[in-house]
Length: 348
Image 1 (cartoon, rainbow, N blue to C red):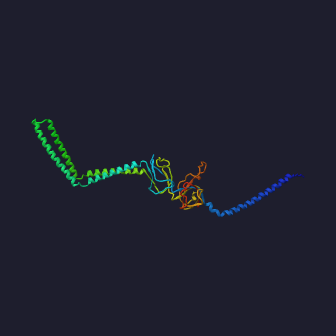
Image 2 (cartoon, rainbow, N blue to C red):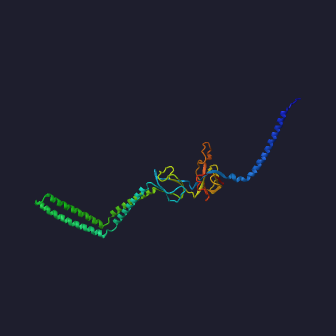
Image 3 (tube, rainbow, N blue to C red):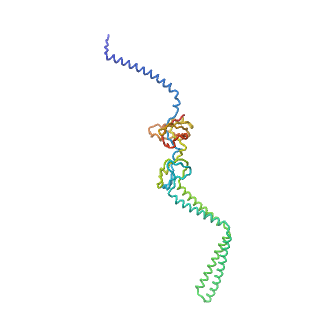
């Protein structure tokens, strides 16, 4: 028979061990009852699990549009300021080259006017007074020629009789030939006045076409110096004022359609199959109180990486995002919150 000696310390350990087992068993039973209760209570919230939660950014229209200018352009006059509402076609800024370009355009317009007058003159009938005047010139030149011819014949005889010097005879001969050529010229002018030649009309038309082309080029140059709004919207920011050179990166200003506000939500590719157009969305953020309402209007067709989270090279390719555009309901007071980051909940 073996005697076992149990010390007081051992009895205390056994008692504590039994107590611990009892507490553990009670906890397990209690925990199971809590889990069961939690499952029962969480059952009605199955719709929350179906909703898609993501981050997004408020944008105006299709986003801010940078209004550019020709390289190394200098602003001469800025006609808008930050917050200005403009309509399509409104002049936003005038560049320094406007004055020179406008002068060139004026000169080109005058050349077109001259070419048009020339064509009309060539095609139109000659005025009777102008025709009579030219006929009188021809008659006068015929009289001059007869006198020159008579003088030449007389002096030629005198020279043959050795009564005058050779120089006098040569002068008379030169005057005769000059008068004859002058008569021919005036006769040509008279003939030109009496008839309209097709070749003259064609030449006048070509000169007019060239003048119009030069005017059109000058008009384009003027338009390049007047920067106009390509759409209606609001000026978000101005980067170049009067006297400043336009930066090729920032342009003159940013213009956006604040009348139509959207949220560009970044939905993970794994949640993409549950997104549908027309789905309602709720937007919250720190820049405004309460929640905004909207609906999905467009789902972009190309996946990309997040612009709201830093890129993690070790992340799974499934974490790539697809942007979803959500049109916000009008009159929610977010026109000045373009670019603000928000939280988005999309119903699926």
